[in-house]
Image 1 (cartoon, rainbow, N blue to C red):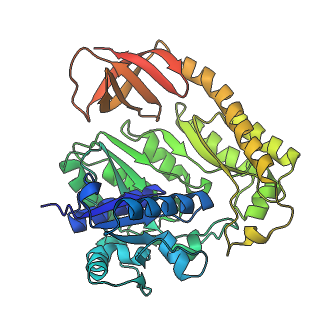
Image 2: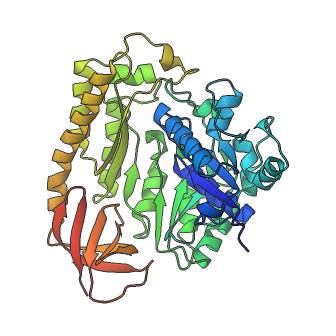
Length: 425
C-alpha cells in the first residue's frame, strides 16, 4: 500500500536516482501524487551551484504551493550544510546521506516536529541498501559503490560521500536478479566512482560476468567510470556478451595536461586516449560519452583549444559540458587566475557546437542500417528507446509494441542528437 502523503523529488546523479528508488520502497511512497503530499523529500545535490539553486527553487515553490507541508532535504546537500560548506534555509529538516536507509525514521521525526539538521549518522553497509526500481521505467539503477578518495580539487564528493565502499558481489547479484524478476530488462551499474569498486569477493569485471548470467536480463550497462576503471578484464567482460552494452561514459574534464594536474586528476591526455583506444581495439563498435569542465582557473585559450581537439579526435556520441562552479571548501575555489563567467559560457557553447559538428556524420552513418532498440515509451505517434550503444531513437510502428522489448528499427534519418526510423519486421 502506497504512502500518498510522502513524495520524493530527485536531483543529481544516478546514485541519487537509485537511492530515491530505495527510499520510495522503504516508505511505500507514491511519486506520482505530489498534490496530496504532506511531506516532501528533496534528495538534493551539491556538486555545482546550479544543482543547489534547483533545490532551493523547488523548496520555495513547494512552500508557496503547499504551505502546510513539511520539506525535508536529504543527501549530499544536507551533508554540505552540516559541514558548513553551504547553507539552506528553505527546508524544515535536513538529513545527510547516511540517513537514507533510515528514511522512515527521518519522516517520523519530521512529522513529530523535528527541525534543523539531524546529527551525523554512521553509514550503513551497502548490503543494507536495496532498490525496488521505478515501475514506470524499463531501466533500473543498481548502486554497487559509494564514496571516493580521489579528492579532485573541484569536487565535494570526498567531503559529503566519505571513503570508498563496495557492495559484495553476491548481494548485488541477488538484487539484480530480483529487479529482472520484477520486469526490468535493463540494469545500469552505478556508484560515485566505479573505478574504486573493490568488493571482498571479486572485481568490477566479476560482477559484470555474474549479472550477465541472470536469466531474463536483456541489457547491462555501466554508468560513468574513470579511465583507471577500464581494465583489460572489464573490457573482455563487455566484449564477450552482446547484452553488455558497448557504451562507456568516461569523464575527461579537460584535454590539457596542465589543467588536469590542477584538477588533481590521475591521468594525462595520452593515458586517457590510450584507454579509449584499447576499448576500441577490443570492441570496435563501442561508443563513448564524457564530461568536460570549461572555465577552470588557469584555463587559457590554448588549453581550451587542446580540449576541443581531444573531444573532436575521440568522437564522443554523448557530451556534458559544465562551466566551472567554485565550491567553497574545495582547493579549486581558491585557485588563482579565474576565468570570467562570460568566457566560460562562450567556451561551453563553442565546445558543444564543435562536438555536435563531429557527431552529425557519425549519426548519418547509421542511416539505412537496422538498429535494435529497447522500447521505452510512446509519445503521440512515435515509439522511443535506445540502441545498445546508447543512441536515442524515435520510430514509427503500425502495431502496439510491448514496452521493455527489443525491436529492429530501420534508420531513415538523423536529426539533432537522435535517430529516426521505422519498425523493421
